[in-house]
Image: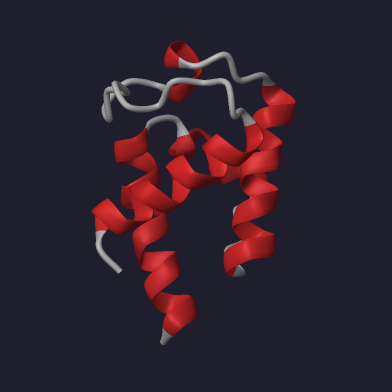
Length: 85
């Protein structure tokens, strides 16, 4: 899986959780919570959907690594590739 595919998965999950959010103009290097109206429960929902839909476990101490789309891709791409292996 590529980093771009990983970003798309995160965007798809956000679209499910917050369907009213406009996702087309997101800056990939800026914190998601600074760009979107996501609260801590929304963030937890993203983490839960990663686990439910894709089998990706994100420990609480790693949550800061999911701040932006770029950091999500950096952190999650190796995990997706490990799950698929």
